[in-house]
Image (cartoon, rainbow, N blue to C red):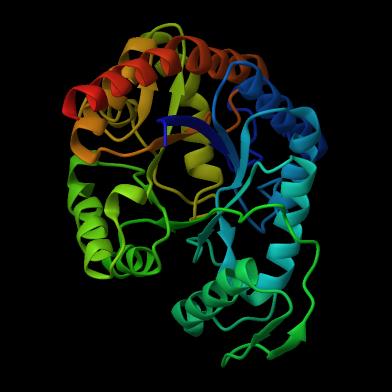
Length: 352
């Protein structure tokens, strides 16, 4: 596949760090649709929305938001980021994303994960002690739903399906990626199933994740899959502006506010000092944070290490104002993406 660049957003509802004003959820959802529209117009490849089940996030139903984006865009792929499959029903997930796929004429994707936020488990009546078992069984059912209709299936944690008629059917097989945060067993699961890997690198040095990509490709080969045919995506926070200094100045107050209010600690987070945030913007840091040249350099440095197929930037965490978000998306699509694609294509050609 050609190298892809994309954006994802969790739809967090963070009070403005300057005014203290809280964004209306409906306004925020419409902002996300506008962001996807601009991303499509400037030639980005993917737009993803997360799933959270708390009052400080606007998106609890990614497929609904993606369906709205499908009607406002023409070419961009539309993905969850992630679908918390452990606490959802695979039949309903398949139906929802098949609907998005039909509305978008084949642009839907699912990034399935176990979920690092756990509020959805008690909300939907699932036992958190079965965290791993739920995901494994539901992933098995979701993958079978892509291939069979009617479907016969039986597991341990869900009622069986006997000649189940699951509709609508998409016109093609919807891509299912596995989201991994650095757990070797999850990496091996993706490799065993021959599914593309979405690796979240949300802090520290990205270089420490090379063993996970290496494990994925070695395990895939051992399970009989061709590693060259299995895509790898790197997902990290970041922000793009006209210069590195402007990117830092614009995004840091909002990132810090989101870090404190919307992270797992829910309002009791440990502050991230500005110097720590800036450290993530260095060549070795995890964040895609800077002006166009910094993002190009970071992407190319990662490509030399991972030889991956896609980057997804969690752009503007903490509700960076919409005008700044749209400018960042435009810069990513018009100034970063063309250069990255050209340089990576040149590297690939020279290695043949």
